[in-house]
Length: 443
Image 1 (cartoon, helix red, strand yellow):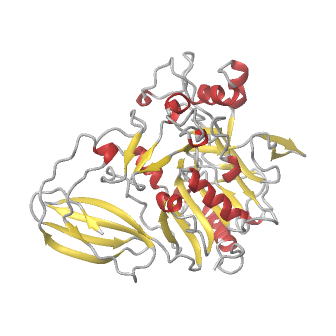
Image 2 (cartoon, helix red, strand yellow; image 1 turned 180 degrees about the vertical axis):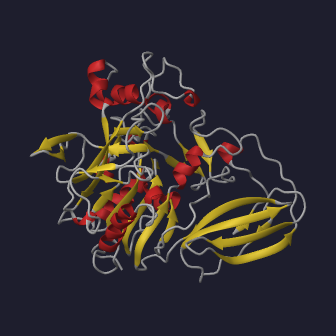
Image 3 (tube, helix red, strand yellow; image 1 turned 90 degrees about the vertical axis):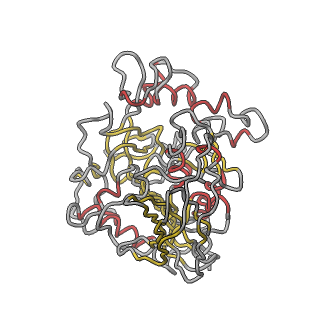
């Protein structure tokens, strides 16, 4: 593995296998390094630096998340990589890091997808803060992969019991969708401890070293929009041009959720979920009852949230199925959410977004693309969203669970909020036990 470094003078390099107890697995002191120029187009095409040092990755390094730390003149810079499990080996949990989403937000060396770029490179450092994590994490053995691994290898999930997505997993490719949906259809389990999940389609190019996304402009400017591969247009998965709503994968969608406790979206919400079905095994050992709050102590329902079209049945919320969500999915808990609007009267957009008022906000954009216009009648259908905590259990496939929010991981402190930790443990104990729930035909 080549490591490219730009620094003045000698540097110290170490590789750390991250986890509950991080361990240094390789190091080298006083490595000769020099300053390397960053191309103006680095954000799109990469740094194109010369290798500074080559690290031989031994086969005995177990699958996991590795951080490369480079220290020079009192400063610290970090990179990371994932060591994959052996193909077909029995794996309880495969956590696929949301590296496609990281790349979308990474502004190192130039603009990201939120600043006008349509192509971003993986061959550059992550901006500061991307590799930070909370102290004292909960301990659970997992194997690790990345978004591009899931796209590249259709057999990556062979032998896996449970696929896991955590945090903010917004950008997915067609192959990624195929891999996980096929896995669940074969009996594998999927945990989406995440929100705003699979909202945008992306394409990987240059041997998976670049990612393409035209986002909001995709239906008008993506080169594939009018051709035989129009389904690969980098638009919303729920857009008619793609016609593959993410509800078919996760059961929920950002189009039916939105923001919560962020900007002007539900600023006074509790940050917790109101429990619907307290007798479900997911809530076992929590002591929760109908109407109780889950996660309000730390605000697990925060930032971006996913929901589905709902109705009442005997006083309890159920999916209507009108948006593609499974009608037999069980709604466990909900919280209010709201798509930002850019209408001149009472705009919800915070000043840092920089979106002019004559450009549709999320609410207007979703209405335009999914219903054909931005009329008050149509925007009203998406204006009042919900974060939905839900599970889909079926006899002819695996189980899919979703937290429907990006901030679930903030509650994984058993001292501060033991109920969120207990729910997560219940899910892992039930859905990630090797040999009991593995997809038929897996090793």
